[in-house]
Image (cartoon, rainbow, N blue to C red; front, side):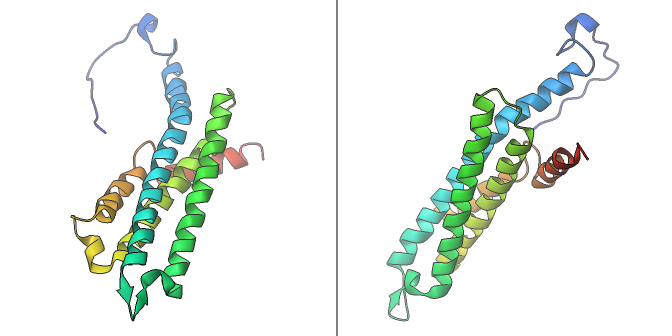
Length: 174
C-alpha cells in the first residue's frame, strides 16, 4: 500500500471519478465489496497450506515414541485448524456467489475477509507451534506463511475495519 498526495489541485466536475464528488468514494467501496472475497480466498488458501504442512510434519515427527498427531493436544490443534479453514471457505463462497449474482455483498464480503484473514493468522501461528523450534526458522514454509498471513489482516481494510462494517450493516435498519 502506498499513498499519494496532491496539494492545491482542482479537478473539474467533468473529470471526477464516478461523476460527482461522492461518486468516487461509492465506486471505491463497491470495488472493495468485489475484492474482499478474493482476499478471503487468498487467506483461506494460505491457511490451508499452513495446515497441510503442519499435518504432514505431525505425521513425520516422533515424540515420546509416537507421531505428533497421535497426541491429543496436536489433534485438537489440527481439528480447530481444519474447522476454521472450512468455515472460511464457506464464507468466501457465499460472498463470491452474491457478488457474481450482482447482489450487494458488503456484509458477507466483510465477514469473509475478516474471518479468513484471522483464520490465516491463527492457523499459520498454530502450524509454527506444531513445528516447534523449527517452525520459527525462516527456512521452513510455515514461518513464511505466518508472516504473509499478517498482511491479510491489514490490507483492504483491517480486521477491525471489517468488524465496523459488519456492525454498521447489521444495525443500519434498527
